[in-house]
Image (cartoon, rainbow over all chains, first blue to last red; front, side, top):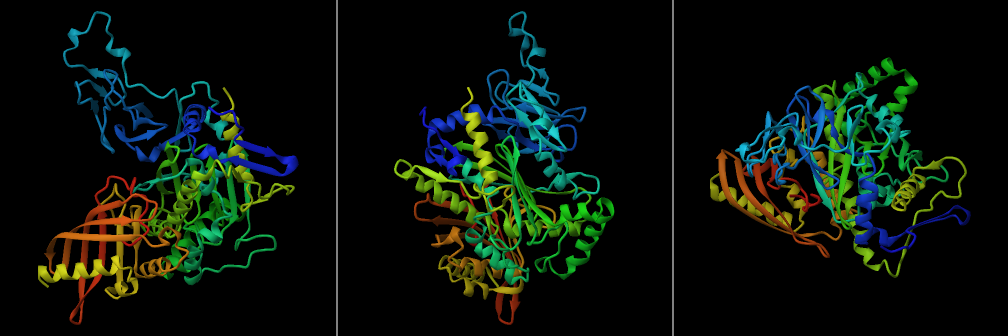
Length: 424
Length: 154
């Protein structure tokens, strides 16, 4: 491992730069697995994805195949998806409901509470062999915040609520869309790879500086559909004002005045005239329940929230959970889904899903161009030995708050990344 | 319409898409056409209830074409080359065609990507001419995974 400093943060010189080897070096990638992904709280899934005892979803988190499930007492559980005998995965379905998990290799069978239930020919094992000591193993820590389930492979990590810190406020704003404070994952998952380093996707997911250039065709689409685009205020570049916030612990968010329409609850012509009464009804419910000020906070701001290191809650054209697995220095598996209030009417749900697709996802009008940008950066990283540094200093000279098109929130990510990478 | 005519129609559509003659392709659609690509884990989903990859009404289809013709649609600028192989064409009901597709997509500096799946076309006669009222492209891949995005018209 190189001893080079990878993040240069010199506020005195107004210099914030990241060494580009951090995006390509396999040694950096290996160290990230141990020092970041094994030491943070990492998102697994949402409680609404497993509603009944025995419901399960299999997925890979931090390189570990997992079973995300509810046990017989309806508690959310996470099992490492490997047989205690010789290691095969005990569940190979994407999703379903299971009474038991039988390893097909030699037939060891576990119940939905993880206990080893049966072994073919158990009498051949030596005396002292204890079936009860061999349940499906679990990650050291699993905790949830308002339906979002995280795990950690660091037994000594602070509680999830403490780790989330200031990010909780931003999760709460999203959940206020629901009269009962409950949101659910909507069926249909977008899982796609990006041929780029995962930290580029972190930056991109809450970098508003790129919007005007990367997404000009999307802005054009909004404009042509009748969305009002105000001239940017002095010193700004976007049609509405926004802030970028460092929330501590590497978390950060944008916090923008909405201009692009929101299923909860700002109608734009794209939704069609027939959607107007439904959006107005949702808005009235928000105001009645939360008061005018909080309703404005919930319905008229867009926020892209990062929970360090790889969980994004994007509350814009719709609400998206975007999380991802780095699988190589130049490869990411992305998993994205839509989140909606549990009380949503079928009509409002349809508006939400339609609005989602205008911007987000592998077939949307924006995300493919983001991916193109990231892959373009990654291809160009063949030059890192000659062009060594990337520049992340926008807004550094400003006192007080920073714009969403400044980069304080990006710097907050990199500072935490650097801190963890340099801790033994 | 018999099977040979259905095949001719699909081949003509494929030729227009592969040639990026998108305005001519729009001419094959009805005024209320829809174009859908369901999420890979919900191939039989309903776009009002499930998240899709693409669920366009005619307005968004036209906007999609306009976008793809703009040099700032970076994911397709310069445009990829595609080559569609359509086979196993069946008329499952009058003016309802199901077929299999293999679409190879090539871009400079990128691996070849192969999109495999089935089409479901519902046609409507406008005068003498069949027009597409609905086209669904249902991918067989379990996840998009290495296919990445669906930035061109499947």
